[in-house]
Image (tube, rainbow over all chains, first blue to last red; front, side):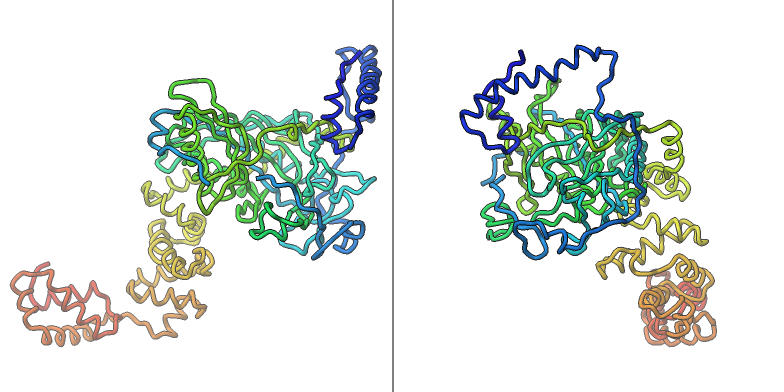
Length: 98
Length: 501
């Protein structure tokens, strides 16, 4: 069984900006371990001679020519924004970094 | 509050610096890395974006072929191996300048790796800088912090985001640790960034304007006790975005680290922010959990396979490297080291090359650009090329002087006229009535009056004080309003007084 601690789950939740209660953290620690084990079973059929893949279809070099195509207007771009000012997205103050 | 520092000399007595650079180069493709929205600077906010750049649900990025080719060219110019196979990866983090909540980058499969460039310092000493990798990624949007007193992030009430820059193709060039630069480390830092800028500009793959952020540098500095081989703890100074700042930032960090280490302290591994006004750095955030980017291969993009034929066809398009071009031109023109260095520093090497191609000798081309045009550009506070003096005009002007039609002083006036847009040198000369008086009859008349006006000087010259002739020449030049051939005037005076020069 994979070892996923409660702290691991809390760390991942924080990185992913997901708020989790104490109960959820406890429960997810156990569930995640099962999930990781389930994924790990792939290694039973795929030996070291099978290269890892990141895409289901063996495509390569799918490119676009460098010519300008579809562009939104600022109004369209901002139409889904919770808040905007001066044709720019308005976001809450960012925590002091310096 | 500024950190204590040791003097640079004290720091160098005790420690050896180790440097490392991450330089981000914005490519000048017409469109973005993964979307067909325009890649342009200075446009109205959020007018160069589409759904892909905004990270809206359901979009599919598609790689810009020209950006990949530019990246391969950069790799080749840095003597790198080009990966036969590479992929993009997601670098996950939350920050409002990145609307997707991840940056599409490359992780363990950069498109170019294991290269080098030779960096020549001003006195000709050469350092080889090894390149670890050059990888493709995308730029982030631009944040403006509002409501604070200083326009900075501290105390801001909210921030405004313009995503025009989001998705602009970037190549990040990462060096291996640079050891052995010693006290020349700050100079080397500047020269390295300058060389990268020159290379990408020469390749035509970037506008390379640092003031617009086309080339941005993060500088890593650490110190180790003299003679040691184990690297010290490094700091990373972010966004040092002018050549002068790169040099100062590296110097400052060396002095700051030295003070920490010399007092028995330990350098903190952290990012530092550069402040141009005080030429110091302040602590940013230390390495933390937030640096856990959980990279994974980008599932929406397929691998890039750079075939040998493709890479070689791109290699065949590479221009002559800037350093080699300089070497070739210097030899061809026969300039001395300082002469050539002045030409390069004045930014007129290309102009001189054109002027020589238009028919001037290397010496004449240098005389006009360095002796006349550069000074006028300085006064006008513009680049020499912006004065609008063409190579053809210089060749014509030079011909007028060599053909005895103008003296140097009048040629300067003609040049002023050319710069003022009065026409070609011949047109300016005629319009301004600048005609060199070399008719001996007219000159002799002026000489007679000048000698009569200063009989004591004439006597001195007769007595063998030849250098006194300058006063008489001056009188003649004044009488002819500067339009006489001073050399010929001098000859005639000495002849008249029966003195052998």
